[in-house]
Length: 362
Ligand SMILES: Nc1ncnc2c1ncn2[C@@H]1O[C@H](COP(=O)(O)OP(=O)(O)O)[C@@H](O)[C@H]1O
Ligand SMILES: [Mg+2]
Image 1 (cartoon, rainbow, N blue to C red):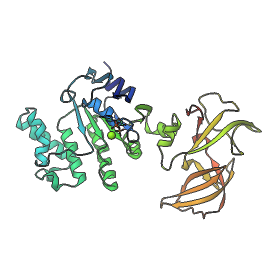
Image 2: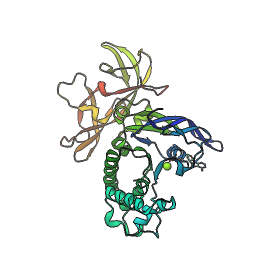
Image 3: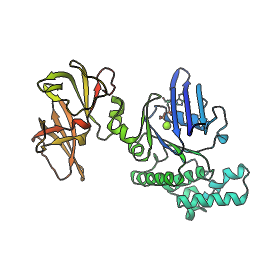
Image 4: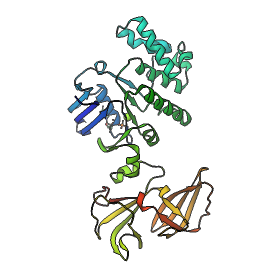
């Protein structure tokens, strides 16, 4: 027996001629918080619904706690699901919304009361138990929806964009609560979102999806610092990683990247494979890994400030550099007027290099 809580093997799903999921494999460890991240339409909900048993895969298998559940009914899978639309019964009180499923399943009243009290306690919704959903705010409704999954006392929680209907402030608050919930319950959680901040803050590991294929599955730090390909690199980070198109050349001081006539030595970059002159590459550098007028920087390059976006804590500069527009994040106290000539430096040790053809990390 493996210690995997959920195991997905070679899963495919097509709607007619459209392949929504393609030969997908995913192992989720017991107690792990996995986030499925990707833009709208990439197949996140489809995958979650297959795990939940709401959709039948065209091919492949799904195991929960070592048991093949590919053809099991949703209620027999030991999962609890929370949707974006809270899907509460409007005519029932919160208490009834929480207890109804348990009553239908034939649980004794004492057990139901115990579970409802516990869920209400964890989610801090005791004062709301006798209200109807119409008398609740969006955040409170979503708490109740989570409570309904909680009372089922399941091994695996599935969340499909649970915070997307909430305003930004509430979303940030409930995000912290979901993290706290996971820290206290330690259940396995599979959480779908298109929001990279939710993914970065909540996940033990993020699975970044595109067109029904997982592009990279790794912890947030690895996804952020060592993106496996250009898609992942561009998807995570705001503003996005800067991409400078160039070619490897043999410069005076060794191998360098030639970007629109500017030669950038690759020293400090740790490549996973041998690199040779002539290769077309894309240099990826995050806005916070670019220096502006750094005293004593080894290599500096001329650049001109195009736009300044002061954001309070940070100041975002858009620079003209080597035929590209480059975003740079500096401290909010450092201000630069448009047109200012500056010296730019690059932290190559934190940069990413991709092959232009394969788009894979070098
Ligand atoms: N019942 C269906 N029939 C046909 N196509 C569907 C159906 N459900 C979803 N799709 C398509 O499958 C793709 C993935 O959908 P979905 O899993 O909902 O994406 P996501 O949750 O990542 O936004 C989309 O292109 C969508 O149009
Ligand atoms: Mg969806």
